[in-house]
Amino acid sequence: MEPVIGLEIHAQLKTRTKLFCSCPTEPGAEPNTLICEVCTGQPGALPRMNGRALELAAKAGLALGCRVNNRSLFSRKNYFYPDLPNGFQTSQLDPPICSGGGLDIEVPGGVKTVRLNRIHLEDDAGKCVHDERRGRTLVDLNRAGTPLVEIVTEPDLSSAGEAVDFLKKLHALLVFLEVTEGRLEEGEFRCDVNVSLKPVGARELGVRGEIKNLNSFRHVGKAVEYEVMRQTALYEKNEPVLQETLHFDPVRLETRTLRTKEEAHDYRYFPQPDLPPVWVGPEIVEAIRLTLPGTVEETRDRLTGLGLRDEQAALLLDRRGALEYFEKTTALFPDPGKAASLMEEFLLPACLKEDLAVADSPLAPEGLARLGELLDKGVLGRRAVQEMFGELFASGRDPEELAREKNLLLVTDRGALSAMAVEVVAAHPEEVAKYRSGQEKIMGFLVGQVMRKSRGAADPKGVARALLEAVGRPEEN
Ligand code: ADP
Ligand code: MG
Ligand code: ZN
Image 1 (cartoon, rainbow, N blue to C red):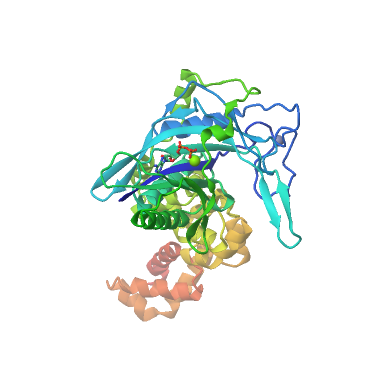
Image 2 (cartoon, rainbow, N blue to C red):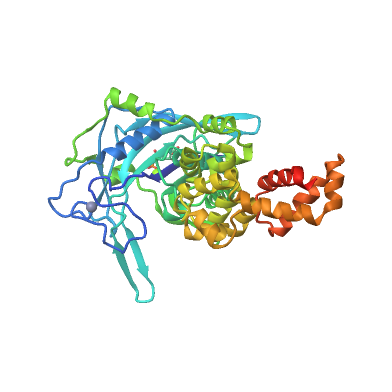
């Protein structure tokens, strides 16, 4: 038997407001503060389509090689749950915003195209919060009406590894396109995993289990593995696999039955009468196509073309928000190599350490650009940066100001440097004589002496210049 896997991915679109009203879409707000009559399903309230959501869905579709349907339709998917105030989800049955398409993944011995069936728009439900202590359940509707795309693959995947690779690649692409923020822990990218078994080479598919709502790549891998094992055991005992909806238990790493599978007709889909058909004309599709930034591979090539090392390019592409931060930094400090190494060496590790998204770094791109400039001008040394970066990052302050306060600015002042050089020359007449007789290596020793005198705070280039002047002065001959 071989596994057959199909995925339904829900990605939250990166819009400021909800799909059918102007309530903001922010995580972490007080419960039931981001709501209105539309997203709480009050009688008579009418939805109004968010154009930006439509655009982002089409953008994802174009990047994934889908056909964007000029006309698509919203339907009501009816079911009851306390976090669904309308009593239906507004979703797209037929036609959806995008059809077809695919994404390639690498498999041993080549590339496999995972075909997409469709991408459609829908709104998210609210959230039930279970208050175990007082034995009650509360409903928070802040999420209700948040725009999602559902991306549905054909059952083309055949192992846990392939499913995880596909999801990681899709996630990276959607984040890169800025279609979604993709924060897994906020549920902004989650998926349902359909798994069945069939005899090797057979065309007909077996009965599937559908594991709901996974928001971790690792859990997807574990859930597929467990489900393949469970179904294999059933086949071996000659027992039927039931078409079921399952839940994955992340502690025991196993799946459990939630309910027997509902069919599409259970939802009594019908066209949503409150919304007109969605029209995205060919000229709009072409305009959206022009906003595509090129593929991840093209961007990697562009970055290495700017002189970044492969690992630096990979780092900027893999860490959410890093590329954007880099672009903003280099717009102000146009030295891509140095900007990338400052990010690699200081900024990204600091974000990791503080568990912060790059976009939430207290040190803004302006600050990092300024730091690059100061290093370039020799006002700051690498050592000083090392010493003060923690504080600079946390405070987001101006680097020069902070360095001055901490006495870390390099001494570049000509007068101060030449005074020190003159002292060193006077204190080491023998070495100076050797230098003048042609032993140029002695210069290193003299520079070292000045650096010591300044306790490491002198700009080495300036020191060398000052010493050459001091040694060469005729009155000292
Ligand atoms: P729904 O789950 O909403 O009923 P579909 O029937 O369209 O919707 O299937 C959803 C997902 O299940 C798709 O990703 C599809 O590829 C996958 N799928 C369908 N049949 C199977 C099967 N026998 N084994 C594994 N995956 C399947
Ligand atoms: Mg499904
Ligand atoms: Zn609202």
